[in-house]
Figure 1 (cartoon, rainbow, N blue to C red):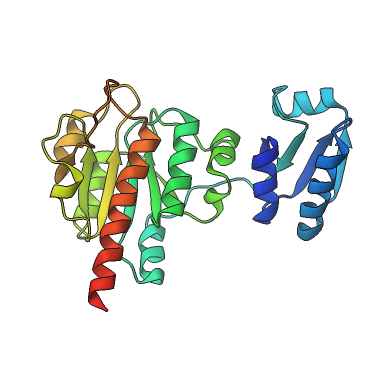
Figure 2 (tube, rainbow, N blue to C red; figure 1 turned 180 degrees about the vertical axis):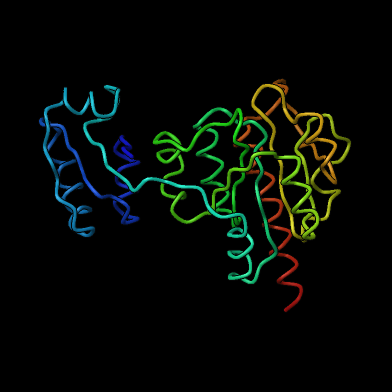
Length: 247
């Protein structure tokens, strides 16, 4: 899997994920020095190639002169998010995506979930963004640390985790409840709907609670990845406060 762009490649080098580093001839020496320093730490050599060859390799000219080959990303086993939560001695916190098709949104949600203490991101096989270089690039390394699941039927999956004691909260701007009205200190799955249509009817009906993020602007809805980040932060704050109070 190839990712490109200076920030994404530097981040991948720092995380020790890079197998191969391709640099276009003619890149400025100052950036070469930065690459060499980071590559040295990861024991990766710089491979200088003609810019046109790099264009072809990543199928774009917007690569900023550098690309990196990463290990292929694969989906995890169904129990891995729960195993990660148990390992951390935390209540499960999952993010379930209902037909998110934009790979940048998918990658941004993976990144936010990892940064904000979640234990896994779940998608449905149909009508969802595939795991791709764009997803990995946007996730900025988080795909290496977070279980990613793909299921055949999202409603059935939600039912199965409810049987394990997980509460399912769906983000829905038509909901009457706002985050402050709900209990966030419990095993949770946050369901984020598609960019255009929101939650599908059966998915909405499967949720235990629907929650709307208060808004005061004129735009009618938030970007899916932003909504996910806000709700993850809400869950994290509630859990932190609860753990502090238990001390």
